[in-house]
Image (tube, rainbow, N blue to C red; front, side, top):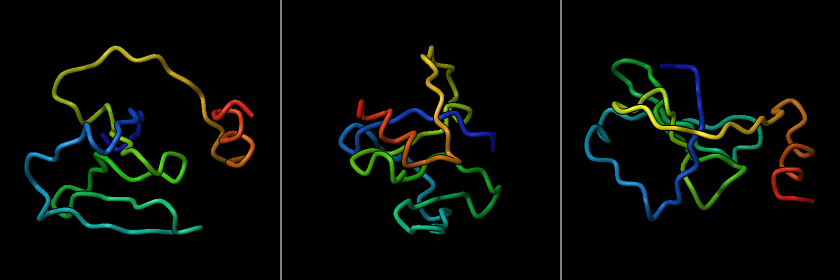
Length: 89
């Protein structure tokens, strides 16, 4: 479950039903992204990505029911270039 398969979900469409008290938050690098993980098991089920400040990135591997996804590659090593391509620039 720690391998991340991102599903971008707008803030308005996301509801955390339980477990908020076990979440720990951290930031690194630019500090724009807010990473969250469970303080009990260490799984990273969702976070606030800097690439989509209006949405959460939910880890598809943490869902109880698999979803059919269209996978788009994102080159995190060359973040600025990959983000511009994602935005269509």
